[in-house]
Amino acid sequence: MRRADIIVVGRGLMGSACARHLAEAGCRVMLVGPDEPIDRAAHDGPFGSFHDAGRITRGIAEDPVWARLSTRSMARYRDLEARSGIGFFTQCGAMMAGPTKGPMAGMMASVTGSAARLGLVHERLEGAALAARAPMFALPAGSVAVFEPSGGVIDPRAMRRAEEALAVAAGTEVVAQPVTGREGAWLTLADGAQVTADHVVIATGGWAGCAPLTGRRPAMRVYQRTVAFAEVTQAEAERLAGMPSLIWVPEGGETDLYLLPPIRYPDGRFYLKIGGEADSPEARDAATLNAWFRGAGSPAAGAVLLEELRRVMPGLRIAGTHTGACAVSFTATGHPYVARVEEGVTLLTGGNGAGAKCADELGRLGAVAALGGDVAAEGLGAEFAPVFETD
Image 1 (cartoon, rainbow, N blue to C red):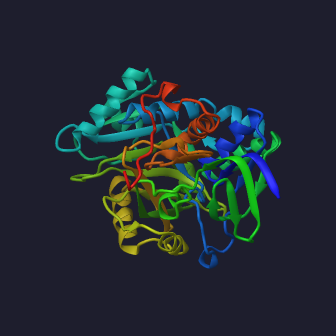
Image 2: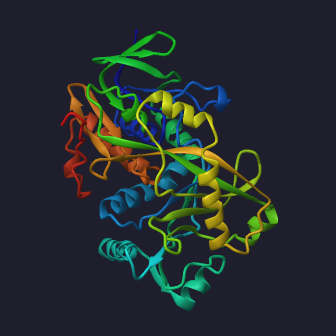
Image 3: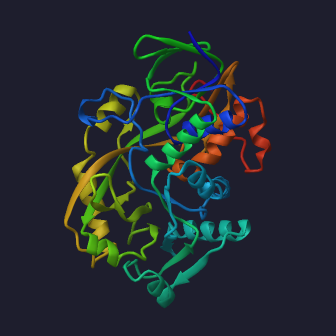
């Protein structure tokens, strides 16, 4: 029987970071979860939204809690890269832009206020100054932007590998199997084997809501999201070398969209990625979520996103387009769930569309909770207590 001090279920960004922090604190850790599928169409799940090459990273945010989470994580990026030998952060700058009037105007007021209160280095730009800073963008008239030079893009696959490599170096055992059931501190794996520990951390992303390993279902809304990709040539990618990551509100939009600069993907090609839907189907069970990830998202949603891409970057020379499936999990509190939820079990989930860049700090908080510490005392401005559907 394989046994550890602590088992972390979920080899995504949060789970791998949590395993690292626990192992480097001296715990005997087992990190359990499947590898990324080679054939997505044939895989029976679970999947990971981190199976991608690009995520925006930024300290600027409407909510100061998320700003603190991300700045703490970002401060450790270079150390993680140096110690693991795996690069994952490109500091190209991050920009958030929105209107000064109308229902979405409050977003930019909150972003500017949060950046000022937390002392984040940033520039407030509008008019000619905004056009000069980001000439590749055709933002709606009247837009104001906040630019953070320390932000940019992370490769979530590479970041997860860096976390796991350091966890393994500190003694973590990796078990590349899905967990199919839990009874107390005993976990059953897909191959029928069982593993156990004194404590279990459940860090399974959207599957924490769709296939809960906790006794009660966390109050989470898991949405099936579509992302769209625009392929560009290497010459076009080089022309856009100064492009920051962007979050912006389109003309008359009711929600913000996000856009990443050209990134070289594993197939060797360069793609810009765009996402951010006002609404999308919700998944309530693992079968629905797994089926979604086996596909390529919604063509209709992808067409809308690509239309907005062409509008905000009218000079972009696009060589081809395609769509992909993603998922985002929103908690009832708007903040992650990080807490002991029963004897011997800690829950670590709830990215709320902002978790990737914050994953190292969220993993650290998961380790604090698993070791019996007070997460609310970590100075982040939130307790991170979970809400359950039976509450």
